[in-house]
Image (tube, rainbow, N blue to C red; front, side, top):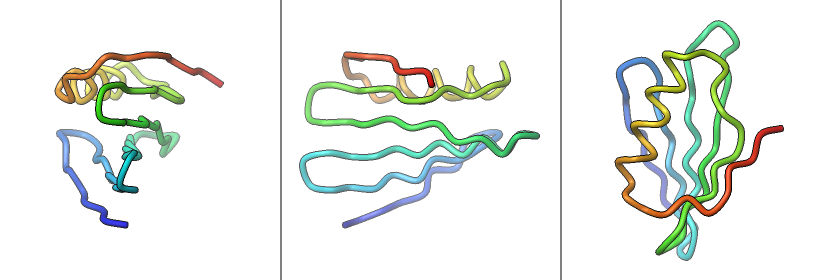
Length: 77
């Protein structure tokens, strides 16, 4: 398994590569120290858990758009 860290303006993303699927773990660095997840395959994205605060949500949304893939499902807990 390969992994890499991508620093964003407020938080950061740890990307774990499991060959056929990638897990993007977005660390918000906000008051709740929250974490959001994206599962990615060669064509699609599955979004799991969203940031609680607007600043982080906007950063998360921009990151997702930058991946340039179709969102097949959004899952909130």
